[in-house]
Length: 148
Image (cartoon, rainbow, N blue to C red; front, side):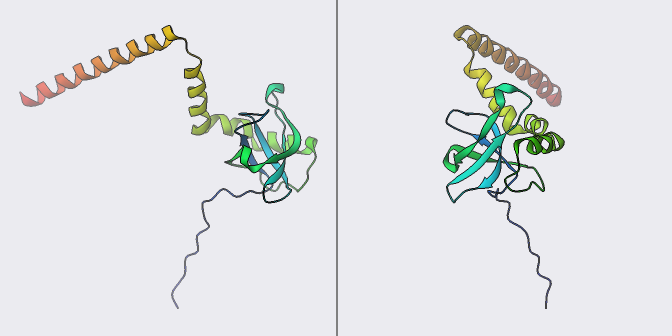
């Protein structure tokens, strides 16, 4: 018989050790880790962080309020305590991985744009116009030299 190639799916599974991002509720935009799966709609999460503003206390969270990230803390035992979870979190470098993630960069940029005042938005518009003009000017030079 022929060789069969079996590939695992690329889905993000709800699993112990999966890092999640809160989309709503009191912990909106904070990271936490799934510590235990309660049922098909709820998970027990805990979010240790060095920054006290980003800490998520251990609680049951509905899956409708979280998004699964691609970051997983490997070999995390079920129902692990907050102390051991914090050491695993730091060993895995979750905060650093999240900051390097393009998803986090995009969210940070969106937040920065939302915070702009009217005048700052106007300045951004003018800078974009200037850069577009310079690009078109250099492109016109290249076209002119190609025709000659």
